[in-house]
Image (cartoon, rainbow, N blue to C red):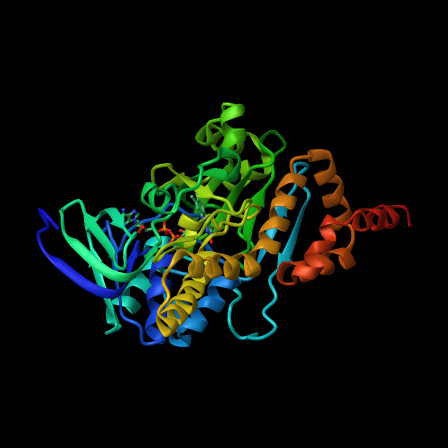
Length: 417
Ligand SMILES: Cc1cc2nc3c(=O)[nH]c(=O)nc-3n(C[C@H](O)[C@H](O)[C@H](O)COP(=O)(O)OP(=O)(O)OC[C@H]3O[C@@H](n4cnc5c(N)ncnc54)[C@H](O)[C@@H]3O)c2cc1C
């Protein structure tokens, strides 16, 4: 290739060293497959996030290597988290502890700044002899039409590989140039994050707090505790709604922290310790193409964020697992074409679509403050119902009840009885 400074070759190239890209590399290495992972940043690097890691992330870490989970658990930079609290527009709240039936001694979730969490994965990759890590290099072009993948960087270096995984995160033009799909604001959310010190009222189990304020539905504010009395405070809402209502997330949040009596109490001695930063969340509320000839998308580049909770790290890591499974089969039978790679799309949506669709449904339900308040009133008054919701957290079939009219009819019955 003309003008190229140097050229390197690997079996699999991965662009983007967030949880999706790093998990892909680590899962591939478990199968003995070499990869080269390239990121435009140098690490440790920050990523705008709520910093909440669910049980799904814990499961993925354990699947990569139980020692990696052990490393996370022992870090002073993390807090173990045992549940979630929801605050309805009428400020009625209920707390749902996470269940961890299979590994009762392990904390079910963790809270840790992404600058620290992604570094845990990065160090595991750097220590692995089957993974080559290249940092501070931006890939700006991928040619995948022939029988090899050619990737070029802005510095005009060239990488060739048999397969390429694009894990470049939200809003990636590179991902869309290779696997075209439309950017649609109704399938995207916008979020802001700011770190605070001296936030009070944290649940003793370090529960994550979601605040659903009437004027901001179906969006919400969050307060996620972090070590040393600090907290990740943020707000997120669907981008089409944000634009239609001409809202400014920073203003919505600042106003709520002053005017909402519950939040004002929690923040009376608090002070911001970082700037406000914004980023987008590609939601899994629609299916998009996930592959092309010799290419797969993972993580946010594949739009896999839960439309209700805004969680994306767990699905990003699982998609790395799915990509590694598919790539290992591709090498076994020597097939890298787009027809074969469609099996990856199928595999991903077979596993995730039911849950993503359900979360899309719940996201729409919370658009109705009266209905939401009513449900919350019933839940706070009824321990049996709270148990049912606890089961819903990790049981998809239980959660499906939320979409059934019979669930609300039963609620009505309970309120009369
Ligand atoms: C405000 C906000 C709050 C959130 N809160 C949570 C939460 O609490 N819990 C949760 O689970 N999820 C949360 N998410 C979602 C979560 O942050 C993402 O789903 C997750 O980071 C996806 O991981 P990823 O590896 O796909 O992408 P990323 O983590 O974004 O990594 C992509 C990487 O690609 C690199 N890159 C991009 N382009 C190139 C290029 N051309 N060449 C080389 N490298 C490139 C970037 O430098 C980056 O390191 C939140 C998101 C936002 C915006």
